[in-house]
Image: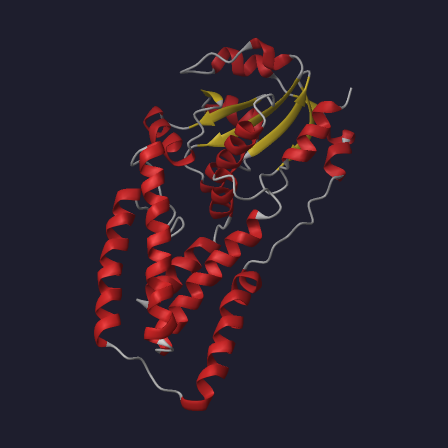
Length: 297
């Protein structure tokens, strides 16, 4: 049981962004606070795992904390199933093990039963006087580990918003001519847009799509368009995972895609009248900075 909690927390750390986005999506955190809440929740999983392994304060604290967290996670999974259906990856084990919300709910039910068995039959270990010191050490270690293993980096440089020397014209005629599935709107050639080139099989692209989806939800006035690369059969799993159906897209394959996007995925362009003014990765992508860019004449 302890190893399951520790593994669950560890897998959420790499990559941690989808777990961070969950709290933004739920509306309980902003872009700046979500990284800290995510690491606190991972620390809680580490704490429960360590306490179970050490057999510390089993009946008094540990199992009550275990059952409480499992119930909390299960309520969230039920909410997801009712609002979005049993689709995509619930994120219980990050991207390491893909589980639907229903599968995760069954897993939690099994762990709840095991927790009740532990509560009834296992007293834990008696560490005597050093027990409280060990308990304090475990708490500090558990909540510090997420920040040590994957620290919060707020060094998002605003300089990329003024790098005009890197500007280049985006040949959108190639997209209009060669895109499949959907015909891109000609309005992409005028005004300001976020145009993101993504491979549907790229895990980083899926993280970027999740972030763009949340940005679009929070500010529908931001024009975002996805140019996707890959077989048509990948469209459904891509959108089931990212839930980015609120963003318009087309499919562009072959040389046309590589010519415009390059080889590093995802390629997220801030386009002004067909000119790429800024080229950012999903880590640098900041809703506030986008809104500042859009407000510029």
